[in-house]
Image 1 (spheres, helix red, strand yellow):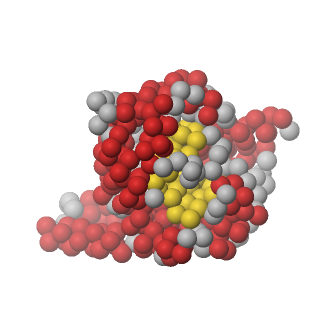
Image 2 (cartoon, rainbow, N blue to C red):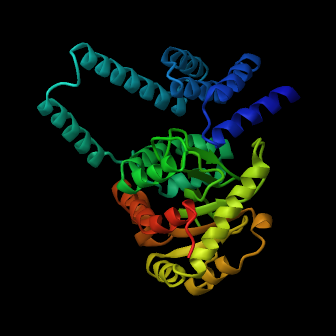
Length: 356
């Protein structure tokens, strides 16, 4: 039993890092073999196979999940993604068999169609009283499962926004992998009453971070979007010592920038946009005025002990205007897009190692 628990933790840690490569596949294959009723093992295995281009194996793993639980939403989403990739592969194969990519007019038409599809893509639903009630009362894994389809569709819509491509480009230029800001299943259960997501490969980086917290966790039902630093060594990440050092370097760069060219800019932005900081396992620091919050960020010297530091915007369900945003998928996407568009110059400077 201990071996299975250790193996499962290893498999989960691969997923938390956004690693769905060959090693992650082997871990989940072994876990599925030892614990054939473990739905998480099968869904992660399906994701690994899909990312490795092994669509037949991915399909077999998905079918194993759906045999155990026909209502598993993660497996259903993966099934749709496998179907889409098969279709895309067949289309490209057809183009090659006809001697190229088609006429210029055809290419333009396809490009126009993709732009229209991206412009019209919206999440499947918002986040209202029912969603936050479920978040508060379900187990962490159960809450992530229940909110998963809404969160995933939101993340996929965010992927289509211009700022997302700029983040991916900055990471690619630094030698990091990834073609999308968020991959599927990029959201994770935290403590009870908390679900969060961060960009692909972002465990030890300044995170493009979004999260949902119930009042039992944060004092008020709320959602956040902004830049986060996970400085904790918790978990089973094999590189967590080096990873913690890496994210500390990023955070120190962030402090230098905020102490100089960004001090007034960030203060003004927080004042105008409902910005608050958060640290450790505490609720958002609503008691701090923007100037005080920025000073706190600059002066913080115990980041390792705190384990988590965040700066960004918040929506609170008990605020009528915020509740309207949370419940409207289109408005929520635009709110997130504006948040990260505003913060992108700061994030990019931190990521590229630029200081004042």
